[in-house]
Length: 135
Image (tube, rainbow, N blue to C red):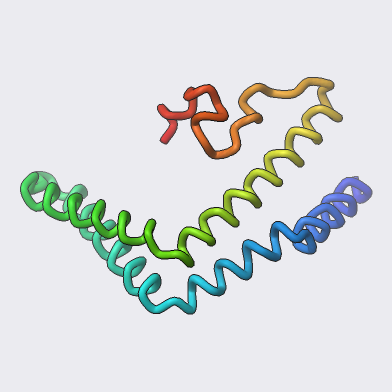
């Protein structure tokens, strides 16, 4: 069992040393230094917390929920237009793809089979649209 954990640590270290991981960390750090991105993300998180708090009430006010939800959507759109956020999202997606590929290789080695579900790259188009229900 120790050999399995040793190899797991080695795999983890190889992932951390990968160009994909390093690019993701650099993109995250750059986005964190972007004041507009930080302020917009903080606003988004505040809105989400407000919505969750209202939803936890016995009789949530639907008009307030709609207003906050619309503002949250607008804030998300603003986030999605910030170059540093776009770059960070793309870098995270690339790292997620790498992890998915590693998982597919492990699954194949252990079972001799490749899962069709494992072929999703984060885009519903690559999943044949089947992941839309999960989002």
